[in-house]
Amino acid sequence: MQSRPRVIVMPRATERCSIIPTEDTWRHRDLMAEIQAMARRGFIPVLNVAGDIDALQDYAFFPAGWKAYGFVVPPGGELEVHLDHPNLGWFRLAMVNKWGSLQRGMLQNLIPKGTPMVTYKNFEKTSQQVFVIADDPGWMSSKQTPYKITIKRTWDAKKEGPGNLPQVLGIWAQHGSIEATPAAEQPSPADPGKSAPQP
Image 1 (cartoon, rainbow, N blue to C red):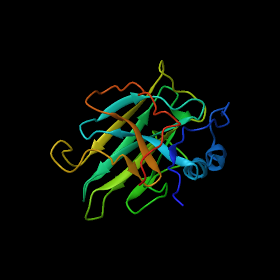
Image 2 (image 1 turned 180 degrees about the vertical axis):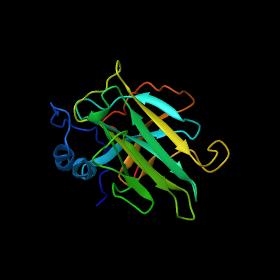
Image 3 (image 1 turned 135 degrees about the horizontal axis):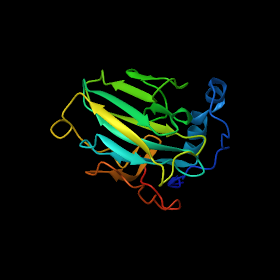
Image 4 (image 1 turned 90 degrees about the vertical axis):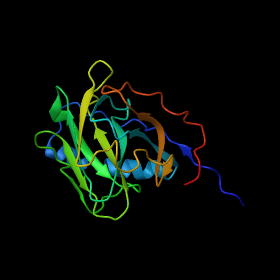
């Protein structure tokens, strides 16, 4: 019996945080559990960030309160991602691999203090794909008030290594990409009912 192709599952609503998040709020907001639950029903949507992009403006899915971005890091490369917004204390960044888990080389502070930031150093001998999640539990970002993501790389992404994610990788599937423009509008998400290719 042939298995049914999985679909891209658009993020569902999460409960809105009505006061500025505290350490207790961040500890109990288990976004990874939500993503793993989504992965049992289909692929998680992710935006591919092209190698020549060093800054972008965007906003989280509404009313889910988060959005994911994918990066390709060559062997020995180091990636650093920062988030900025007028209401900075309402945000955090998380980084995961293709299965939604931490892996060697990833550093992050899931209880933000100061500017939300994640870093990754690729200790492997092949290029690695990593996924950065902008978490916005208070729904503070919008088209009118986007957050800004700044990207620093230790390699020349225009010359070294692949710049694009595979269409499907692990639990993730591309539903758009950010290329060649420093301030990206939110792309139209893929049709939630459209089947994604098998990994």
